Length: 124
Length: 412
Image (cartoon, rainbow over all chains, first blue to last red):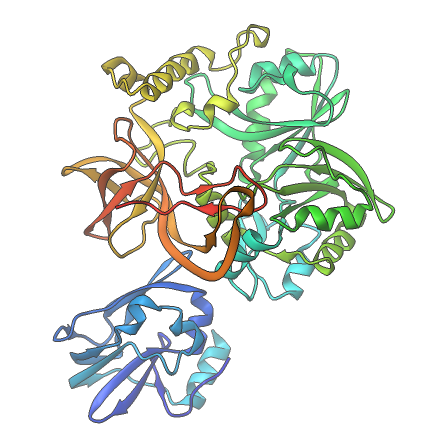
């Protein structure tokens, strides 16, 4: 399992990275491995409001559906449309395959740095 | 909560990095590190290996074994010659299924009945008061042998190598043989639950379990878990007890003839006598025949209100067990099994079919819906609050010409 030191992590295994004033959100390597082969992604629409701790979409593996929980509160500025046709990118490149970018962030969950997240995963 | 049972291959699964889950009281591999999609595609193109040792294996022997089996199973047991197997259902008096099973005759004087792992105790309890009336016995030998399914285009070659023979069994499905493989006696059955045109199930002595599994891997088989087993059987429209058999989402018993394959599993020949469920099944069979002739009379619809059918999603999404199916706004049944299933693009026809490197995936499944929905009929599925368009095709694959399964993509 890899943990990218550039990102911060939620306890629900999403990663967060700041880029050009936007919060970029994806899922960790730990998450994609636990979920298994991803075959479908439901994404919000640009302009939708998202709330920290609440679902902003879901991912489906062959066996199950899992909510994507948003680590921040704000407005969806961009979605990664490439994932709609190629959800497997989340398995192949979890830190490259971002899911949404959020603007106007007003609240952020208490996030873990890479070292703390590694310890958190070790206990999971 | 009792402890989970483990098969003799448990350590091999763990060593291979499998994800283990509780399945019918057994700790079984749901997938190995390569994942369900890869395992599914490897079975379709090469050879998947499945540990099916958890399934219930029962030996029925004694002078009245045939009469007993004729009474409790749906099939005509007398039609089985030595070294033949048959699919059958264990009917309840109301014409629903207690379980489905496979009956094998490796020896003249005894039968092997293989039932679902999660139903083994229930089946034994069901048989107990009936078998008392017959001069025969049922012995649960589940823990005395193991069982491995060897499925896919390369399976025949692998078993020929292992047994040093030119013919593993007679060519057609449901043939059996007893072979020596590198000094170990193995019972071989040309059967399986993957819809592969070529596939075998092996019954192996406990002391040979690890040897057999590892030799099959060395010869080109790859372990596949319960996840791939489910997608493979779903693509082939093979029913699973609890999904397409048993009770529906509303708690009502599902008639056996709701399944298209009931006509192969249920026999009304006179020598079978008055078996459990016969009267109810005869009415259902009449209704199924009537639907086949496109006659949806009120009598037929009353005898068989819903049938088990393939379903393919047209809109983007994935169907899952329990989701409601609608026709023109009216709820007409449920999805019984569904997920996203991978397939190989193919070229050519019949025995010249070639699998291409390119793969696709499709959201397909099985549903239990109003019997009068025609082939290619349009329906909607309620996927977590959204009504998505779906179609009822005639099948998801063709598998009548070895060696490859060919996907049939729904027209819409």
